[in-house]
Amino acid sequence: MLKIKVLLFGITTDLLGESSITVHIESAITIQELKELLLNKYPQLKHIHSYAIAVNEEYASNETTLKENDIVAIIPPVSGG
Image 1 (cartoon, helix red, strand yellow):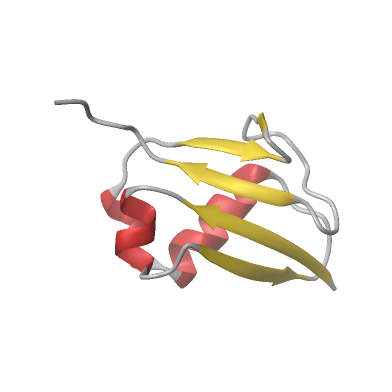
Image 2 (cartoon, helix red, strand yellow):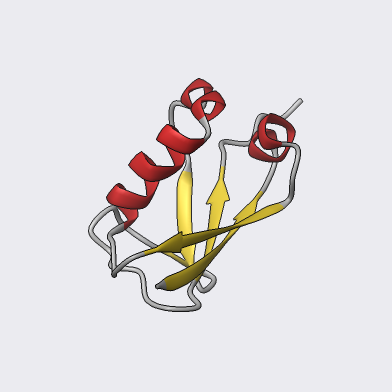
């Protein structure tokens, strides 16, 4: 079982009421698979249409494969004003 820490920022913190969550998965998955898993577990995330993902402080693509103890950050769009 792999443990992935997911850091939440901006609107994602408001939607989930937490600043981070820990996801336990059976085997390595891609960012795309993690997005689908999070959307199934936290349907309120469907309100965010685009967001960036960083893995271990570097931007990552949907094809990036996650490993044990990776730290994933969900970075929603920031609106100025």
